[in-house]
Amino acid sequence: MFSPVAREWCLVVRPRDEATEDELSLIDLVFEMQEPPFDWERDGSDWLVFGDARHSVRRLEKAVLHALAESDVADAVVTPLWCGRLDDDTGGYSFPPWVGEQLEEPEPEPVVSPEEIAWAVSVKPVTFFGWPRLREELERLGRTAIDEDEHRIEIGARDQPDAQALLDQLRDAGLIREGDARSLNWFRRWRVRQQLLGNYAAPYDPSQSV
Image 1: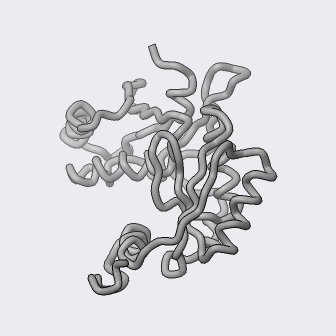
Image 2 (image 1 turned 180 degrees about the vertical axis):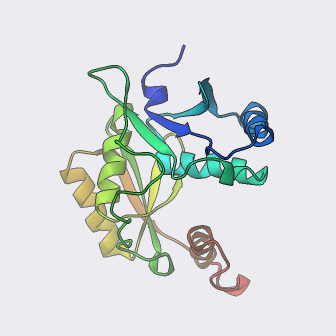
């Protein structure tokens, strides 16, 4: 049995009206064969994919669409995916009143661009249940996550004063239990740029990876 925290988010993968039977069968196969597997189930003609409270629903959506794209069926589903969040009062999911059209404001530009990231701020929420609030605050602040695992999340910063200011903001808001900051060597900065920009923003120079 899944706990509520393990299913904090629900993504609805809905086939387009013009999707063929072959495409629908292939979507089924994508979910059945995915490794590591998604937490998913069928609901009528839809596929429901669940995500836990520790992780970003946007990353989950990207992972789902990437898996579908690898089998050439990403165009057979309605995008962006319909995203719902667990409602503690009703025990169900709260969805926006739309599917397949982007009504939200576009994401703001990050406070620190990928090219400017030279420090990493590593933080851990006050409790396991604090992941959603921490992520919402980082998004509100225009901060970019550069790495994460089930215990911590790393956020990019411009320099030491910027990193310290972020730590102070999160501590003052009561959102983190632990936090520290460190500078990134040249190679790590290059990898961050590659990760965030999706390309080799600058050639790797081994002489500077110190």
